[in-house]
Length: 389
Ligand SMILES: Cc1cc2nc3c(=O)[nH]c(=O)nc-3n(C[C@H](O)[C@H](O)[C@H](O)COP(=O)(O)OP(=O)(O)OC[C@H]3O[C@@H](n4cnc5c(N)ncnc54)[C@H](O)[C@@H]3O)c2cc1C
Image (cartoon, rainbow, N blue to C red; front, top):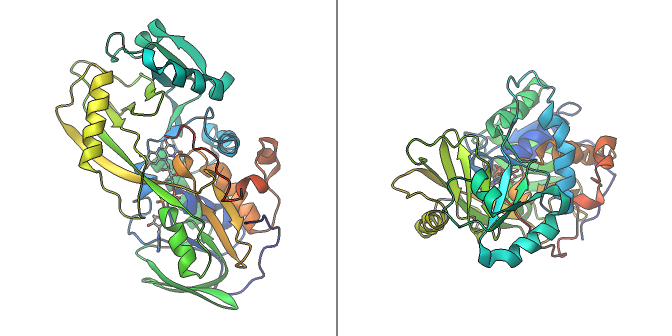
């Protein structure tokens, strides 16, 4: 079992810390660490954000997810609402809202979701639902729940903020540097296609590949499961401007639809286990998506303008892991963010940076319920996956 530790390893190697993976997790923790340490951020691709970070639905909501996710999301709120950054000129969040919609035959699922989300959402009746989601087929929505906290995140701006803050603090980003071997000789030695790097500390922020990185380092994998999710962009019906509509999520998570820059982002909310890879949309799931969307909404999908798939990676607990491995000194895990890695990044990065350095969790985050123990839940505990974007 992974235990929290307040013992940061002693110094050794060319850098104080090597962060592997420059998606949102790696970029954000590297930016925090670089304020106090020398850090190299290693990325396989030429473009950081090419994998899951660049493929999300970009939603921020404090209303759902396991308790640790809600705590991290609340603790990220101050940064999202009032970021202090010379690299951000526009707000990171814009209001969206989410309507969870249920047909009459989904009353039981609606009751279960209502009791799970509690006061975080407002109940809607059939007329509320059809007023708020005019594109739903007549009579489709029998009831709904409204999450008014939900906002769109400017993911690209958030990611760029962290990469620029990292560089400004003296951090070194090495792209096109696939990690090929990891060994130990007083310090960690990380061999990549972009050179060799040594350090007392590795932060494993490799997303879907986090277990593979552990295995390369001779560290036991943690049972991470990447799950593929498909998304696509379609045009709205003629003469319709959807920008001010809320996101619509099926109460049993069979589909979602979200306005996106004048278009509609749609997904069948699939969650097929996958090996870590450059995920590509599966035609079967594209077909399921179109079918589910056309059944619920008064539109016919004539052309898919863009489609993609991404991997949401879950540990068996369903909770993220931000802790030193208890068997491998100086090997820090930052993995398993599932469908919440963007909205939790500001707080998770600060918490992880504190733990890497052997410091306590910052007080404002502790006040929201983020503890070191909550960030290293025993991977064998099976916390049921809850509604995820
Ligand atoms: C369809 C979809 C919708 C989503 N919607 C939301 C949402 O609305 N809100 C939300 O908060 N989250 C959402 N998520 C989840 C969120 O996108 C992820 O939790 C987050 O992007 C994970 O970030 P990451 O940095 O861990 O992974 P990644 O972005 O995948 O980064 C990992 C990096 O590690 C690098 N790497 C791996 N192996 C190596 C190696 N050997 N050498 C060097 N580099 C390596 C990879 O190249 C990659 O760049 C969604 C995800 C999907 C797929």
